[in-house]
Amino acid sequence: MKKSLFISLSFLLSTGVTYSTVQLKKQLPVKKFPIKIMRDNVIFSDDFESYAEGDDFASPGGWTMSKMGQGSDGYVTDDLAHSGTKSVYLAAPEKNSRVDCKWYGQDIQYTQLNHIEIWVFPEQNDVQLTALKAAYSAGGQWGGGGAFGAIQFWPNGKLGYADGINGNVMLDKTWTAGRWYHIKMVLDHSTKRWEFFMDDELIATNLGFMNSYIYEPNRITFSASGGSAYWDDFTYKSIPVIEPRLP
Image (cartoon, rainbow, N blue to C red):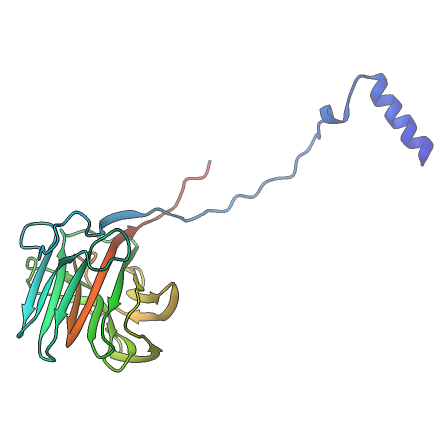
């Protein structure tokens, strides 16, 4: 064996051929697999830093407010923020009062997935919040239409949701006042299903759309009743699935 190895090395050195220049006559075939590439398209995002303190969105900016009941109010504040210095504060102290903050955009033909996320800070344990709701409005900002789904904070400290299969559902998952929560909805238009996360933990999945449209959500809502809360760092993304061309 040693003699055979010595002869082989001597032959390579005598012909001026090194190991690095020896070429394989036949290479193994490389199998290519199609890959789905997810590309984010931010439809709208807002950290509320561009608004003046006390602004209730009476001026154009994508957001509007609806205030119902005695003492209800809502505005941009610098009292508390998840990032930067400002957030949106909604206060509806009476049980029958309510404040809605809504964003309305143009019709967008759906692609595949929607990621809609926001941060919320409830001030009281008995407040009732619609932390995030995605809907489609066919008749303008406050016009008719229907919802895809909603994430709810119930006054008994339970987390819940509303979907098109089970209606309003209360979960065993709990929340407490006095801290920020990261809330995210993921809507899949190919299956007409959605799921939601809190602080990057999957809370519920395979939830049904409350209504089915050929458009993506163009009306996003958050609201408070019987208490107050802050919202900050809103992002709405559309994520198409692209099949790349293979050479």
